Each structure stands twice: as C-alpha cells, then as structure tokens.
Image 1: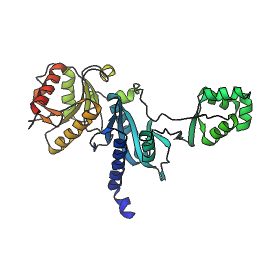
Image 2 (image 1 turned 45 degrees about the vertical axis):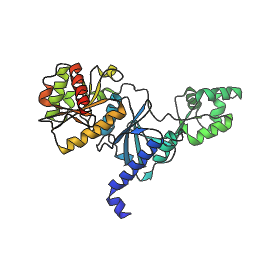
Image 3 (image 1 turned 120 degrees about the vertical axis):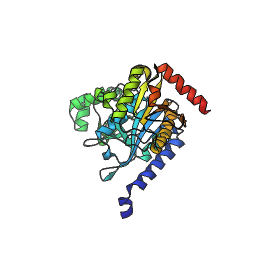
Image 4 (image 1 turned 90 degrees about the horizontal axis):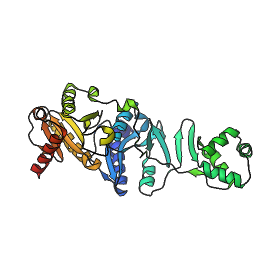
Length: 336
C-alpha cells in the first residue's frame, strides 16, 4: 500500500486503461492519451463526442482547468466529463453523479452502466448529501387522482406546503428518503433518471469564451495566432490542451457546425512537437476536425500522421483561409 501511495501515476494509468476499455466496449472510437493538464482523451460514438478528464480524486479539478475543458468542448461540439475514484477521502458511490464546476463526474461503474448497459443514474451529489429529481407532472396527476391536497402531502412528508408545490413545478429536488416516501404515499414512480451529459451545446459564459489571441501563453503563440487572424481565421485559444488554439474559417458560433475547424499547434521542431502532432492528429480524427502545427524554423516533413506542418515564414505568404486549406489538402495528398 505504501508503494501505491508514493507512486500515484501507475494507479492513474490503471484508471485510464479501465476508462478506455469501457468506452471501446460501448462502441466509441477513442483518441490517443493527450498527456496534458486539460482533458485526457476524446471519444466519439456516432454524433456524441466526449472530452474526458480522468483523475483519481475529483477534488483535484481546479476551476481554471474546468474552464479550459469547457472551452475546448464548446469549440468541438463535445460533452465534457470527469471520471474518478474519490472525492476527498471517500470513494465515489456507484450510480451517483457528482459535479465539479458544472462538469459531471462519475466512477467507472457508473460510466459502464450508463454507456454499456444504457442504465441512467437517478441520484446526484450536492452540498448536504444525495438528491433526486421528481417528475412534477406525474406527481400532480397522482395527487389529484387520490384527491389529496398539497397540504395533505406536506403533512405526510413533514415538509412545508411550499416545498411540495416546488416539487410539482419541477423547481426543487429532494432527498432519496423523502422521494421514496412520496412515491409510497402516491403509489406511483416519481424519481426521474438523470441526463448525465449536456448535449445542447449552449454558449458558455463570457469568461470561458474570452480566449482570443491576447490569451496566448507565449510570444511565439501570440505572433503566429495574430498571423492566423490576419489571414482571416477566428481564434479561440485552449489552455493546457495538446494544441494551442482552435482556428475557425467562420465565426465560432457558425463554424462549430459549418466551415473549417482546425486544431492548431505552435512550436519549434522538436521530438516533443512530433509527439504532440501525433496526439493532435488522433484528436482531429475523433472530433472530425483538421489539425496543423505551425513551426518556428525549418520543417523536416510536411505532415505527421494527419497533422499538416507549416513553417512560420510560409504562413506569411498565405492570403486567406481558402488558400490555407488548399495547401493543407495538397500536403495531405503528397503524403498519400
């Protein structure tokens, strides 16, 4: 046990291996492991794309990392998810959904049940304990059928009439114990299954989307992303990810479903860059995007896997997104 505590990496490797096994059994195609502080991998099944952060203790998720994952998920029409083992010193419970900064978090058992067995969880964790959601319409129909008033239900449950009213309006969750008692009183099933993933892709808050060129982390990134903007691309930077930004040929609100969407890396030509380019290539295949690395200096090859390479000096000669895309396609054909 002492060796395990001193060497957490192998334990995380085991957790990632289990997540990969579950997702593949559920029919997902899965990217390479990202080896970044942001999400650990991307996975896609038909039209559902996941960005998964995998960690032993979900309390290790910072708000900054959560924002970076949400930003990437918004760009890539993906649902962010956290898979872990613990919260604090306690194990995550089976069939319970936790949340960290608005991202759903669950253990591998719940992940398996949800994606492989297609069994939805019913319980979520929040401040104060475990809660469930009530089907307010079914509750009202059952109450009226039994000719019970809101006050009658309140008295039976030992809660206020206002609370019962909120249950029926779908405005308030309740504890498992109260929900089960309510089902017993009304003799009907009322606890609703949870939709674990947010698949509506609403525009996130402005602090998450505030991620243009000015948010780049290095002078080289700012320089090259500014050049991409001058060409005509819209830029959203992606902190802590294997790529530096997502470049759009249309405004992000439209280009997320239309136009060209490019995972854009920036680096000198190094062995580490080659490794990152392979990871980004894998991500682009899963997320159905394109991938490019703009290299400061000479490039030794025009493509690494499916990631096209551009020299910084070459970029200066590009006039618009269409020309940029044409060069990418030509280089892809050269490799074939």
